[in-house]
Amino acid sequence: MQQASVPEKPVGLVDDEQIVAPAPMVVRRFIKFGDTDAAGVVYSGRFLDFALEAFDTLLRVGFDLGWPQQEASGVGTPAVSFHLEFSRSLRAGDQLDIEILIDRIGGGSFTVRTVGRNARAEDVFYATMIFASVTNDDRKPVKLPDWLRSKLEAYVASCEAGKGA
Image (cartoon, rainbow, N blue to C red; front, side):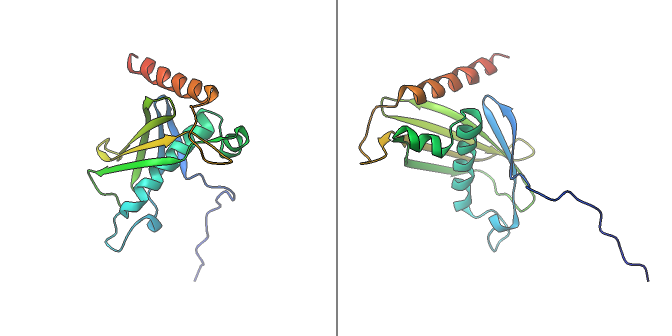
């Protein structure tokens, strides 16, 4: 009996996310078995993780602002509010595209909205997250730093410009 051969596959890092559009940024991921519950659908708590991870991708890739750079600035932006709504379920192997929008830029906070869609472009979930600006050492509220405000405003402007195209 002949043994089946295993096809050669690349060895190395496998990306969990792919950026499929820059402004508004859309991050694509595929649902893993570990994201699901006993019923075989994505555990509801994972959707918040998906929204936060997509926003982190915007910070790191779109703004070139990882957490180490933000920490070094002396100002952090902890989340102070989350709101999630669900429209459809997902199963392991399903595609999820997460669009990231900035809804509001205030004096000391900003609001991020993510919309998750399946491969048929049907809405799966909405998440609204509010982040406050605080000093890293004593966690006191402060005005949004100009460097962050400018990145947020530039992103909003590029998203608006993309709507007209």
